[in-house]
Length: 253
Image (tube, rainbow, N blue to C red; front, side, top):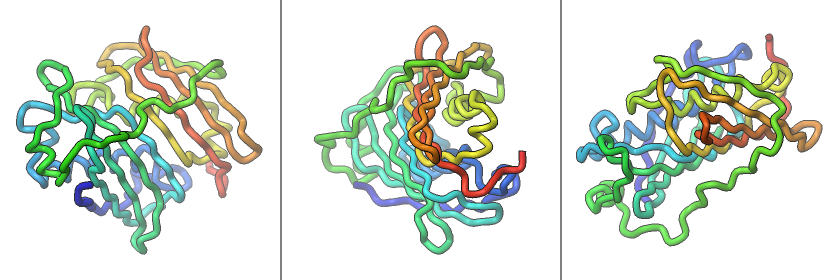
């Protein structure tokens, strides 16, 4: 395992929802930002690009949230590389409050891509040295362990716009998560908080394309539900599995 990297973030007014809790999407933005900060600081990348014209492309998130920070709180986000396997890199993250209490933790899988050819590229010995990795993982985490959507309870569509595109010239990963959330009724968004989300990114799309979001709600108990989501453009682009618990306090909308 490599050495952890830390960065502090203050929760601003534009980061919070109507209850003044930090938005889920903001926490996910922190996870990617701290990766770029670490890789740039170690000299592996410059502004997110590996020096041999490669980029890390996210394939999967598995995020657990135990408590949401609030407006004006300061959180510390950490990340560390836990290993690699051929073209894949594996990371772990934590988010803690100013007293060191664990608010959230996550794991991710990314793939190294030749930016110009859009093809996977094997991780180099130099990159392993940067992160202090000596050998490949023998038993890496499974990529697709998500429940399969079987029925569609809610459906919507979205035309990819200029604001959806990120620095890699494809749709930002957080935007897919927001599309899945926006497909759900207000009764869920108003009364439940996300406690776990698994996201599998399978294919890319870009500006001007229309995607369909299909969502299914599974009632686990009175206080817990699971929603399943497929985002498609002829073929499956993104697959999501989200666990929700009843919110401790009511929202304002």
